[in-house]
Each structure stands twice: as C-alpha cells, then as structure tokens.
Length: 270
Image (cartoon, rainbow, N blue to C red; front, side, top):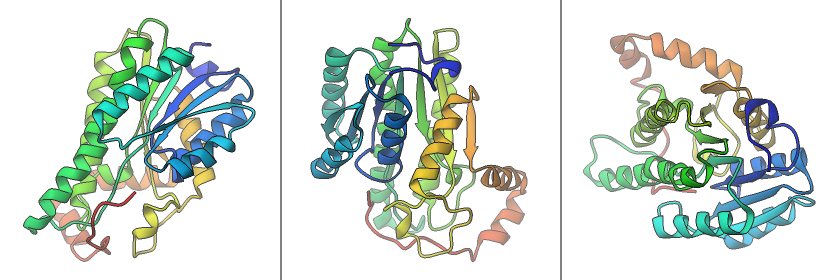
C-alpha cells in the first residue's frame, strides 16, 4: 500500500478505516473513497447497524468493503475490529474517526448529566480510541489520522452544551496529538464540518445555514484531509462564520445567542 502523504491521498489503492459508516457522512465518505481509489482499495467500515453497514459495503464495489459492527463506546469491540483489519489487510493509510452522537441538552438540568457523559464517551473517548488503536501499526510507515469535529466546538451553543463541549474537547485532543506525533511520519487532521444533511442533523428544529448534502460534505471533507492543512472548516462560508464567532467577546456572544434556536432535548441519537 502507498504512504498516505498529502500528494498521494488522491491516487492508487489505499487501506482506509472509517467509523460511523452505516449512514450519513461516514457512509458517503466510504463511497467517495471507493470511487476515488477503486479496485484494490480496502475500506473498513464500522457502525452499529449491521444491515445498513452491509448495504454500504455492497455500494463500494469494485473496492473491497470490510464490515465491523460495534458501538464506538465499546472499547473491546473497537480493539478487536482494528486488530482484525490490520491482520487481514495491513495497516491503514487513512483512518477517519467519524462516529459520534448528538442530543439537545440543558446545562441547568441534572437529568442531562448522564446524556453529557454519554456524548463525551462517544465523541471524545471514541474518537481518541479510534485513532490511538491504529497508531502502533501505522507508525514508521506513514499515514493520516483524521478526526471529524464540528464548528459547534468553536463556541458553547445554548441547547447544545454537551455536544459543543465534546467537539471542543475533540479539537483540543487532536491538536495535542498532532504536536505529539510531529516527525513520526503520521499526519493528524482536524475537520470541522458545518451542517450536513444526515439523520443526526434532521433532529434539529431550526434552519441550518449552508446545509450540505452528505455526498457534497464527503467530497469537501476528503479534500480537506488531502490538503495537508492541520485544521479545516467546511464549507468555506462556515469557516468565515467560525472566525467571526471566535472574535465575539463573551458578553456579546451571551447577548446574541441567549434566544437562539435550540436543539430539542432528547436522548442521544445516531
């Protein structure tokens, strides 16, 4: 397999492993890379729904799909899947930690603390474990570790405190990993998508600016991963919004978002 340096991510067969691939962005990413790399590529796809995962695998031909059914919060399941993939197909050239969950929460509601813990377990611990488990096999041969964060991690949005905090933690963890692995031959990329039309975002009861289809989002995320940049926000319009949000002083952010539309409170969803 080829080394996944920025200039080779768009050429030749590759070993790729993607979590959260039974639907939404993860499934679209698997199909995108299957079209890009074709026969010879082995795309490991992980998710919780065996039937949907099998359907995604069928859509990857002539690339080969390798299905792994587990919940991203199941450490033993993740470790077993990674070990099996490496044993059968070799070390990945690209790992995309995409799996995550979302739910509307209120920071002043004690009942939502359990939801907060659940979201952090998937979106932070799950992301970290996905990338960490492949590092020993990839170290020394090169490759890319990509974490899917979110523009929601830029500020603490009311009604989405747990989700925003989890994505902020993911951004910071990926930044630390990037510095720690500098010079190792492994590249770490943080991708912060805006709104993508997936089962997760369809829970939102408000208008979502710059909404992308899953296919368009996947193409943009893949370009971001191949760009060689450390952190990328997609689409570019949302990058401009994220920079503006960063510059808002706390008192102005508080006033501007106090009555902003909020995600309905519910248990975490896929």
